[in-house]
Image (tube, rainbow, N blue to C red; front, side, top):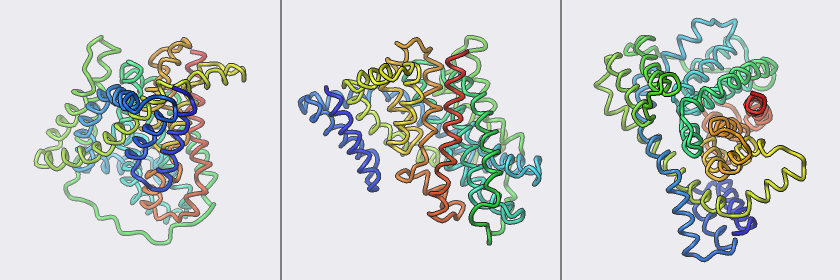
Amino acid sequence: MTAFGAILGLLIAIILIIRKSNPAYSLILGAIIGGLAGGVSLTETVNLMISGVKDVTPAIVRILTAGILAGILIKTEAATKIAETIIDKLGEKRAILALALSALILTAIGVFVDVAVITVSPIALAIAKRLKISKMSMLLAMIGGGKCGNVISPNPNTIAAAENFGASLSSVMWANIIPAIIGLIATVSISKLLINKGEKVIEVEDIQESKEMPSFFGSVIGPIVTIVLLALRPIAGINIDPLLALPIGGLVGIVVMGKTSKLKESMEYGLQKMSGVAILLVGTGTIAGIIKNSTLKDVILSGLSKANISEQLIAPIAGALMSGATASTTAGATIASATFSGAVLSAGVSAVLGAAMINAGATVFDHLPHGSFFHSTGGATNVSLNERLKLIPYETAVGATIAFSSTLLAIFF
């Protein structure tokens, strides 16, 4: 199948997504048109699309079970407790660092980036008003921290990248620890430059402290159990699949917190959040099936060769381009890893580092306006559209820093 068909299908999907069409249906339609325009029959096009969905099915199953941990962290207010504790311990003098670190940790333990920002934003708004920190500075701190946490998390993007490369989830998470730290430093540094730039917080709602909030120990025990279970494979050779490790961690956490009465509510919330991602991944699977079986990979590899760019760089470049096309870390990492994993591995890159670089690359453009993340984070912090648009270059700089750091580590170490 020709590269033209794959490119046309992807462009149509992008245009539809920008025009606010449902992302999953947009990707499916793009896949159909791409296959037909690429020179294959309708029957073969459908077969390629189904093949692409089959490739991401194991990741979808693991993502659905991950919803148990995510739902428990949110609905038991464990995520809020963790964020409040971090901010309280670091103090107002380190407010920017506290906000970034809170979002990083929440995302790293399995909370979605947008949910992490929404969770921290009430505290962030109160601090920003008191210290006269601009909305742009406050929001970038949380978004940048979330991006850093996302590349070391058991979130859908990491699961999909690891699955498509056949790599251990825990190993892919650990591979980006240093890039995440470097990204955090970049986030704090850039956010401080924006403290007096743009709109300031004028009014905030009073934060009502919940009497049912769990202890800090109870809040973190679930994520700790999950991380320990996932770490058993590289440390002791004991393979606990994420399909088991993530829900077990959540269930242990809710028992320790004494919040078992909220288990049903938490599971329903987690399933609701992950169902949207699972449906999106079905759409990404169809377009990935078309791209994977086209000559687009060969065209890109040829272009890199003519430009004297190492084939190893295809991983972060593919992650960045696909995240920009879909305005989604999950969709970007899934399409890039499903399509280019073979080419990356053929270039001599290990499965773990290939998945890590694509995951890092997927943070570069995942915040563009045609995605939900752009609007949900702006709405949570009452940032105007104009201010939110001005923040894009700074968000891109943080994502690029993470991707660049991940790539350097993979090349030299």
